[in-house]
Image (cartoon, rainbow, N blue to C red; front, side, top):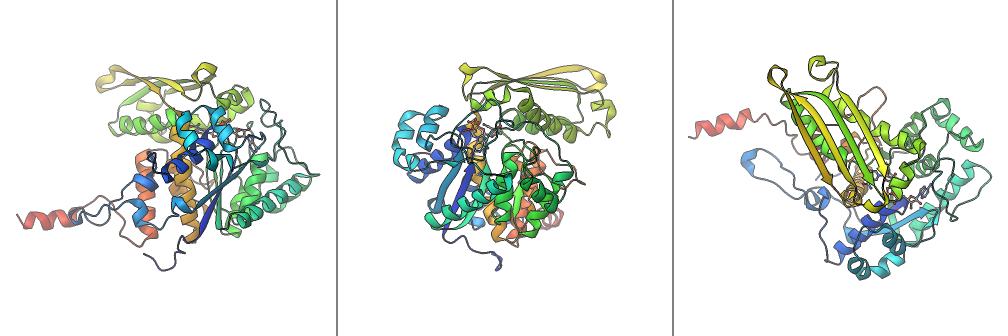
Length: 441
Ligand SMILES: NC(=O)c1ccc[n+]([C@@H]2O[C@H](COP(=O)([O-])OP(=O)(O)OC[C@H]3O[C@@H](n4cnc5c(N)ncnc54)[C@H](O)[C@@H]3O)[C@@H](O)[C@H]2O)c1
């Protein structure tokens, strides 16, 4: 192990704005795993392996045995929500996990009560809770969040904290002048500028405090020059946007395969029904627009129509999400993909994914929290592109285009872990030892 990585000693606080379906499924899951009544399936930090060295060396340690990550028993949870329900009540409302599982960890979940939220209905008009902070300016609200972080750390005896946004999708906004520098951003906080969304206030508070921040929703949040600059200044790792689950996960698994075989794609129609609170929020056109932009970017980046106009130049891509209460958290998605092959002959692929959104999102929250903490202890700051694997719309520097291909994202993540630990990077070339093996025949 590299000598300069700070060990994961002591307790790690995971602070979450938005204690809804994803957050409660995540927290309940970790508590259940700690009790030995469930497995952390879908979490690379807990169950994944990594190859080290040459194939002939046969070294495949578990990731958690390779890199120094916080132990699940050393985690303390906290968060904010505009509804007063504790995590047990919120998990019951979310209806993701079964009652017997929740009852087995009831005391742990009941003990986590949401702090008052920074909330503004003009960003999420379909919600209206009362557990909300008041302050003369957005700057005052940011200072209150900073105090919350400090108090949480003291009360829970944590020596490190990370923050993962699991709050609702806010209405669509674009980066403007007030988001361009720290000075302008802080002035805008003090002037109560309407283009500063609540999620930006949490992100500002975290980054200002040196607390790593990940954004699980498609909101702009920390994807603005002012907060990227602040992250560099305070040595803080950041990442976003929008957890890669469900339909987009499938898309970024399948599309690289079609592209790899140089098969053409004429159309990709994706539709979803979803009945949880997230679906209700996304039923509003302003909030759907934020999600739509995040979901649409994926195919263009994988297929690169400008490089292969004959294969992807006419690709028609459409994404719909419909709120349908009976579906609850069990989102159902349908994809119709019109592809063509040799000599232009048409084919179709149909996908009907009956997924459980929060079951796919919960391990992502865990991995992001643990990896961001590792990044901080390894002196990495700013945008952590190696965590693109977990995001629908990975945050990059403005001059770079994001990588969406899940296999390239995985390779980048694994090579970054090898790099952090001072191991050889793996190029998959293997010519050197192939020759050596041939000679031993
Ligand atoms: N479920 C998934 O698989 C998935 C996948 C990708 C992204 N996401 C995103 O993750 C977020 C959470 O999803 P969910 O299914 O848990 O939704 P949810 O509606 O169950 O939970 C969101 C919670 O955030 C709270 N909230 C909203 N604004 C807040 C604020 N300003 N401060 C504090 N709390 C606030 C809400 O009251 C709610 O309890 C959404 O933005 C969603 O789009 C979810």
